[in-house]
Length: 311
Figure 1 (cartoon, rainbow, N blue to C red):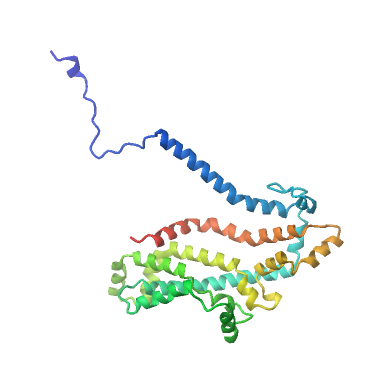
Figure 2 (tube, rainbow, N blue to C red):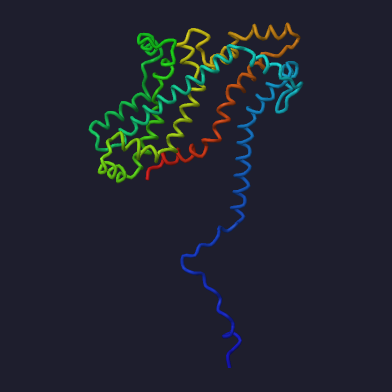
């Protein structure tokens, strides 16, 4: 007679190599809660200045002076937006910013990519010297006056080249691209050489198609840097019609210009605080970058990880 115990199916033993799910221990749940709280605080602290500046740009002077504008506009008005958008100098400077950013970014990407690709070749003679020259510039520079004399003597003043050429290569971006190129399999380039491709052909047909993530990341880095840059333009561009919009904004903040505009509004009985004028210009200046970033975010994260971790 078969016993009842023998008739029962044997309990299934865990198979070797079978993973168990993460145990939701009390400590792990506490970690999740603390992590969520910290990240929420970081998001709030990060977003508050942006929301506040947008609210100030749509608020009336009296509420701004009284310090009553935080996250919601008070005395809602778009008069200052109409003022700035009707200023021909603002649109001229805005167009200059687009031209300067596109031109400088293209030059920087070409030069950084070529330099990084060369430095990624370990068999290159003098490679250490070239890397040392690039790294040296991270810690030492000629200084403001020698740079100004050099740009002026080369005839670059009052032109886009005064902004694009002196800052064409960022060493940090160069080293990130170099690390990425070193992580690519060398067999791919060897196969291209066997098929008769030249060095430039290998770079254009093999390396660059595999480097879309890192190139997009560098484009974002350079574009944001040139878009926000104002000091080089402030030094090398003398005429208002050549200024980028960041210099226009700087002059509003410094009080060098904008007084006439504010006075014109006062005469029209549409008085707005100077802080509102600054807030509107900040919003209009940062808006393009905020609109472009979501489309390149996936390339940004992937490019940074690939460029920072070799293997």
